Length: 431
Image (cartoon, rainbow, N blue to C red; front, side, top):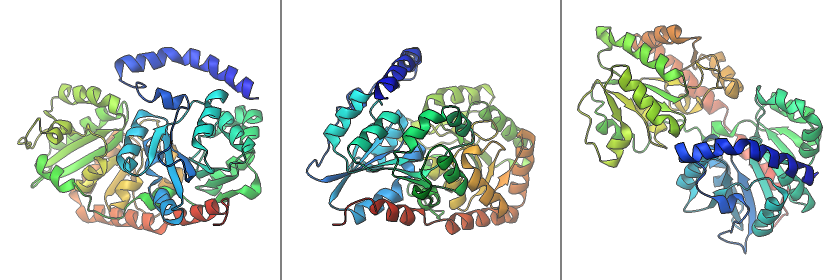
């Protein structure tokens, strides 16, 4: 089976290599970590037992915060190591944990690479965030009697039909997973249908509720407020936006600015993908608005922003929560276009009036909880976004009620970390 997997991977790599080369040359991606991707990884404390956590990208890395904090507290005799797949995931992991944890690129799932990685790392347990179950990885762990646990597990509406198409292959892999700790019963049922064992598939809730900080104060936000000169201003922050959305958001903003009562309204756009920063910058300037790139303020290249009419582009990593904390109203992106949505828990947890579009399949349960409690607002299109934003700005009490209800939803759904930790510890020897 490993040989068959390697053959399939080889063909896939050959087909994908032009895209990799294009991204290397044009987007400055895939230039680092090749030794690690090939399994040449060393640990900081090889004398200790080991918990290997894998988180694909930024969202999954962020979801590890409470999990890792609790593991460090409960398992001081273990070294915790963290891998990620994407460059942005690695960047975020290093930002959060570089001083405490070994952070590295996840190795390719070729059998010889995985054997090398397991030989060097010698993990005692492997925790895979959300899904990311690779056949050779899971097979090698099973041969070495190393339990593999899917934590914060989910299978999206888009992914589930694809997995069903290759169910005979998926079943063999899923059957080797020691535990599926699912966010919801629906996700648990999907894991079982695809081969997960019923007795080992447990609903624990979403870790993201635990990592979402129910506070309106974020360290560093005051500095941003001074840098972008928000005195007597209201901020409309659009975070985690995707292709096609920024144009709609700018049109909505331009329409609102024609009304005298919104003269003090400013727009902040924070695209989800760093490689789109320049594209969105051009879009803002081509729309007729003056542009402030926050990266220039942050680096000191530009001093405090004097023009309170500029559109601010949040083209830095790790500052979105700070912008959210300064917002009067938040729009959570990748939702007016069919991309599944970005994380709306962060802004709701901060007590911000949160708006998103109809395409939120990546956050189905969170959206359901928020909407049922009137803790967020769903709009169907650009026009409805404009009308809803206008209502929220004209009626601060209405916006406050939405924001308060949303924050309460986040508070009510906390607790997944402790449930997950309990099940993970049950797989480790008692010491």
